[in-house]
Length: 422
Image (cartoon, rainbow, N blue to C red; front, side):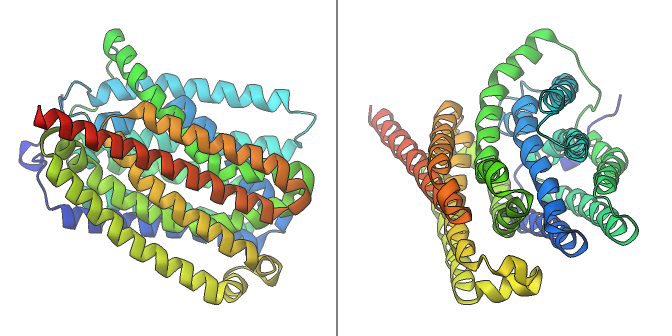
């Protein structure tokens, strides 16, 4: 049994340093994902790009639903009742269920999806299974606030994935090989870096304890539901665009969202760095909790304002330089998508704060309401208005989700003050 390195396990590390490392890791990681889309748009026709993005749109929400958000439960566990081995045991079962679900889905949609589309979906599933294993090990580094090691892992995976995509673009005419290289790159870093790093802090063996595993699923499944819904919300527009406007239109809308997703990944890095501290402050120091949340919001809003200004002033130029004039024709949609992204990132901050306070059901309600509104508006607007309709549906959805999260936090704050006075 590997003995934990107690010299490295002290949780009270510099929040500023951890935030910088988390942002750096997410910027480089999201930059690689952005580069993947960029390479795909240069190397493949728009309909091929659309099929790749649609495969990710199908697989990603389903994988988060079935795999649940075990890492968030592990990271925000302040009583140390969850062990890494318990998370690994649950993840083994959930990955098997994910594979079964994808195979079943491809069989049911055989008449609607081409053979290439089905193969891309299954291979995108292998990528998500590999990444979900790595996610568990990285939860140890996040909980111990060693975001530097977390960043090294993310960057290593990003470089490996980017290399596989470049190889596919230069040597192959089929994006299928991209997913194979992607999976291999994640597994190599997982085995040779993530697992040994986690072993410095805890036992990395799988543990099967039925009672603990059941309790972990009970707590993680609601969290997985709302994370899956949140991710699905990014893809709702593509689900409605594909059958009406075709694969190329999916590529156009997906590419615009990929640009905004890079900014969202930076915000996610900030949220991951502060989430363990927010969880402790929520439990033991409400004043510090509110102060830290306010700081995160103010800095994030300043960055969002800069993003919106850049897209407003130079949207067509940005799209022409990065992608192609074919994509630059949709610069008006780009601005609407950017607005939706900024509102969404505010909702991410408030939503992750709710998770830190263990108000999982409230967050799930907020996200579910946003997805329902997005789907309803897309069903009305996408067919007559195309990409513009999908973009405005995303704005409305993000606004509703953010408003509900804010209401939950304000209610929690008032309740906490009343209890303190009593």
